[in-house]
Length: 473
Ligand code: SF4
Image (cartoon, rainbow, N blue to C red):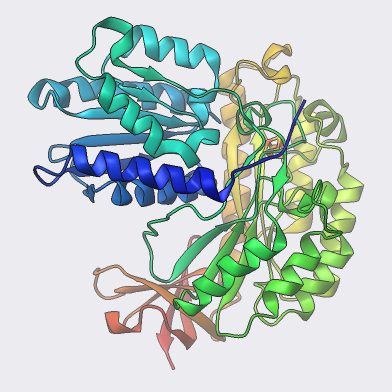
């Protein structure tokens, strides 16, 4: 049974004391740490906390495996082939350890929340010193200290395999080392209650729990004060924000409260489950000063039969109604989506339904995947008679359609003047700046790197399937 477990200030302060003890152990010379992140934005956000802890523990951050005294791998469990890649990379760290026996290898993230995976690491990846789960991020300093103290012991006692199931954790005030000065992640909730039949997330990230609105607002105010210009609210399903909180609130209310913070910034969010996207949300977005008119609304399939098999809890007609309502509220809406091709039992007719819906909606961009089974999910046990080769043919047709539509959408920008936020210097002539429209479209520009972090009016001069090209006005 899920129980919300709020980490107390005292518990957090105790972790800072563990940081002091780790600091003392490594004080004799500079120590370097590298954090390697796989998977989604939530994981990138978690890695910022991991780096925050490591800095508090006295480590300097590095991008070099050779230089690192500690390598932390923040893993993703969404796709099986990604897990294999992670394990391959972790196994290869044995070479680094042979050269530097003091190297500490820590593996965290969603993969470790699966018991079979922990066992596999325990048995076959002796290079790993510490395994910790996503729910234990708040107590990483304690786990790290214990791992250090275990070194030199014999056999199983020399390593720490944690990742205990404690899925209701909500932790505030953790240190964070952000890796960008313009864009910031702002996690508003964790976990998922939806149990889509192909997805492992609810099993590894636990049940949905929201941060309190006052904590989210305080973090947003601080980000704006620090000069961040592009803030993305994160959650597996942001549209069900607020469930289980004492306060009577919801995602549109949170968005409206965030929008009221003064400043020149853009608010984005991801991801939205279509079943929970409401007209109230579209209205708040339309009326908001800061919110990007962009929704990432994962469709997954255009076939009602497959949507039922996926346990998505909306149908084609309902999805199209939401799209129409969102576009009525925001005529300039940028709409993006995710689609899975070749779900177990999918037929040519089901795929044709997906293709026709894609044509009907006309997405600005699509993220397309061939279904890959996840052990432990209901879909992995469903009969799947269609060959990989056939799925690949469907996939290629879908990608062709997606690319054609994206190219058409992008071409329609040419000649227009749009406001963009310059978010990076690429160093690649002639377009040495990257920027985004409020709707999230990538615009390449020529200009001074000092413009990074500024909003500019830009005339769009050219376009491709993937990006726009512009001139500063
Ligand atoms: S909404 Fe569905 S796909 Fe998204 S995280 Fe939850 S279970 Fe997974």
